[in-house]
Image (cartoon, rainbow, N blue to C red; front, side, top):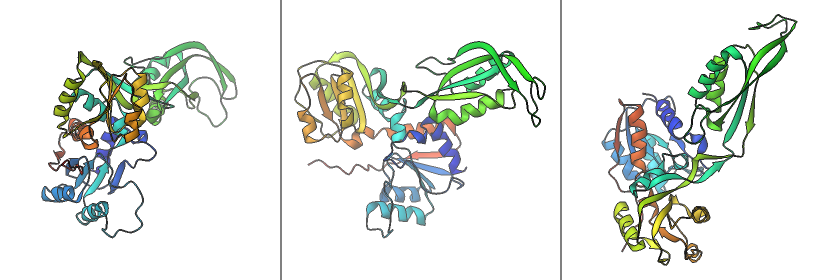
Length: 364
């Protein structure tokens, strides 16, 4: 199997275009045309993880955190990232990372964490803006259904939990075919009037290429007239963090103890207890302090994340509890997601989850 086939599976589940600007998701080492036969899944790529891949004859390592975030000017093995990279190169092991794009999708890192907490009514905490586009296409009435269905099949027309969404307006289109055309209707050199539908629908920008391709293939015209408009609407299915509800309100101490057990955390740093019950929970796997205000605006009773700074706890109010469970602890279930994504789509590809705990933090 080629590496590009594995990449296409992740592209469908968590498009790489959704990664943050600072990120480096995608191939760390290898070529899309490389043949791979067995993958090892991990949170972090370390030298020990590469050794594990060698021992288990894995020629692909799929990680959440990219091994490389910045450019390398010298490959001397003086840093743990270089040691791991050199060993992977020597043993021809491809490296692929799926990071903030997996954080951004609805059923990604944060959704899995919310499930581990037993939350219901899970939704994106900070939906992403500027990701949606409106597509308008003009089509002969008798072919409108075929074109609409092609758009929907390619992923257009989804609004919240509704799909096949479109607006259709009938009217009359005009055109004059030139000498070098093969018009579907009308005559060359003559202005033609055609009864047409104006079909409007919506799509996320990462599906634009596929949707336009499907539209053109289904459309009868030699030249398809269509418009694309950027939208400021928030895309509720994509963004950072999650918020959900506990089945029943819980005491803060009880919830923190339950959280500690669920994440196998050695300790949880938290702001002073508010004395309120915990019902609505906001969360973000990894470093999520930037979502604190969004969590408060959502009416969360507690915000669970990692890497909070000293002064973040000062900013906590009596209305919302802050809980820092640790970076590794909040993202440890990512390996399960990566495994599920590949194994459900490619049942014949050998996969295993790393048995190495790469958490660099220790507690005395």
